[in-house]
Length: 492
Image (cartoon, rainbow, N blue to C red):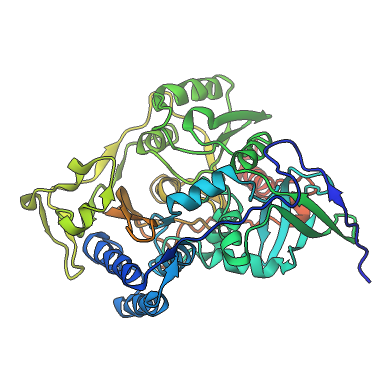
């Protein structure tokens, strides 16, 4: 018989509400005809604008998905149900930049009401662990067996089924399930209330690191409370300005760059990295480990600045983009927003048909010559990768691996080596439900090839962390990288 320790456990002060507080969301009813109109607009936007719509999934399968949505909503639905239906459909496209955003009312509810888990979780296959805890009685390394009676394996499967990824990088779903600013904290927090109901407190069935099973009940956190919990442990860098750190172990430097996002608080990326590499070179470092495991991508200027500091000879990087729409259709545009409409009005004379893809490609696209920085590192370089890499970080890692011979150690990445469907994005609001859909307008072409179609980077040395190693305080990926470097180092 399981030993159970059940009681009211005081949550930390960061945004917690009182146990039993009503977290219920009053879902808004939507008439069937209005819901069908939303589905028609969604289909139009995707089919006429999205350049990666049928990149990985046959149109026949997508048509079946749209038919299923129409059947589900024709007699009426709610904004919650519509959000889940749209999310399930968008996952079929297999594009990480194609996501649904909550309707405003739902987003506002989650912002002001404590509904977030008081822990950050870690997915290991179908097992769920506590990575960071904001609740008394719950410790880092505890295995979560269930939450509010729902088995952990079910929660992981449900979350991952709704998280979009590029191509066939399915292992990358777990990264956004664990932690994601785009999902208001994490994919688990984002989808769990819609699938299992709203709750202001959670009962965790836990197995401790010393064995034994117990149940702990704790309050929910607000969105801000969840973010403060995570930030207080130093694991969530949202801007490049704060994302770069260096430490040294003998003649090895470990450079950690947690994001390339450089548009909210922009800094001169070359100047910032110049100071970092100036110190690395001054110390006479022989081996540089570049830890990009927490880096999901971001701005080109930051990624290129890092690339320039890691190469010794100029390299050429393919530069090109394909589009489906040279002009955004009027019936889509009237329901859409973006940060740069001018970038979406394209001169037809600058483009030509791209084979049988139904897309247009730039006529003048040519490789970009990237020179090394004056203070580029001249020693041996190893890059650490993870399933959390996507977009710009995956493209950088692939470029270093294929064009500069840099050794990659860690997990296979998310993202697309060939280039993501991303660039300028339009935000299409479905008027009846209020669900906003991100529709990317550019398909980047890198000129690089993955080892398998539709995949990210395959490391030269694959190392997948284990819960036993991680919660014993070991960094198994870094250990493997340092051991491999010792084996490869010339005798002195």
